[in-house]
Length: 299
Length: 259
Image 1 (cartoon, rainbow over the protein chains, first blue to last red):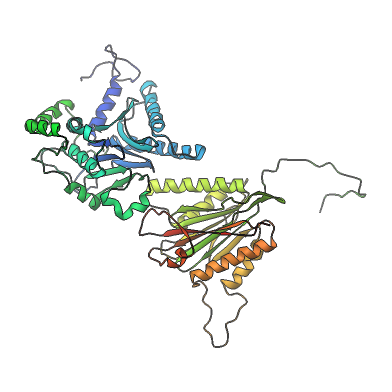
Image 2 (image 1 turned 90 degrees about the vertical axis):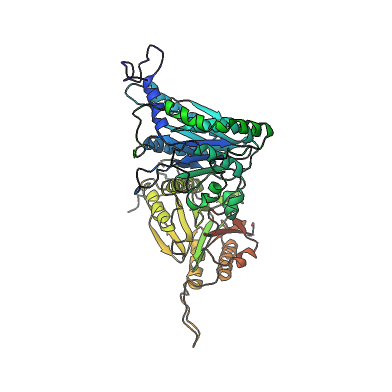
């Protein structure tokens, strides 16, 4: 990508039929730290890597509760994320007030997508600089959506966004068929493995820099407060000490991540060299001159 | 002072008619604070004039794990007011990642009521629950937001029957201790005594006030760690709480006379 005369106004197409401002907004999402989402038949989970601007600083919050049945993880401009999450909360509450039922998740995601699209077509406005992974629950079970500043939203079985998210995607593509029938603990373990793929060389997942968002009935490690989660399992964010058991359940890094289907086990043995390949792919997707890790505006 | 009255009965002045935005829906609510618990109760009858609109319309609502709001007056304003209070509490939870403390809810309610000082919510509110220091509390409000923390309060149609009884039984007004006995200490009544006082208040009010009856709904909020065997043995239904180690809320229902 390079600068040209068609990228200053978001209302100007390039000769190739592209809106560069929107694409630059997508770049802002890629600068945020990684977030991973996936769902099974019974649960939907979000995992996020929290960034801190320095040793003395706290870690940026990556996950927000929208309602009992909806939660989001963000990647990109945190201020834009706050505005969008407030809007989503408003919509969720208005829906309960007007219709006496929780807002359908697809309707909520469409609402923010429509809002974001306006900013790609009206002169003088800039697109939102944040992407979201939205998990929600309705009568047809759990759902995962990706929202992007382009104004697109799409439903997924598993997805990742943010810095080096391609590495996580590679893991998810390899294992997503196992997710549908996975237990909550297995689903989270897959998510942690996927998130780990996005880490830089000397970093690791800790209780301080990892955030887990869960929707669905209480898991094995949540039996103590099972009553407060309700039958449906309201959205909750796990951080700090409580996620140690989940981190402990991860396989050590040298061994390929566990697979339970026979065919995949054979493939895993053959793909032992695979971990090296995603690491090589990752730098190519990022723009040169990307923002450093200690930028306070980016989460 | 009054407008000039017609001299003879068959002389009438013109009367301007206007839409009355308010109605009176009857019913009575009551709340009593103990040392580490709070009871908030209301009958379930809703009336207009001499008609019964319904025998079961709740007037007492759970706001958070530690706060319960009872509303009485004009039911349309009451229900809408409760919905708005619940929304504001939800926003607080989003902003602060914790439940709103009782005294904060009380002050917020004052602001919401006074905000409509020139077209008020016709509701008499009683907020009951557990304060941040673990003590039982009752806050009572007038329709435009004047409020005060008290040990007990009755509001609604039969408030004039019940409040004097409470003054005598809770504050021990107009009572003197027996010679040689210890002086009274208001605020330390055991829970079963308080529940009996509540039930007796409503059964008595039902006898003498036509707008009170049908059913009684009592919410009991207890401080964290407090023994709950007494309440559970009465057949209370426990409402699910956000934190298992925190305050707990139980609901007790009783019938009242339907005539």
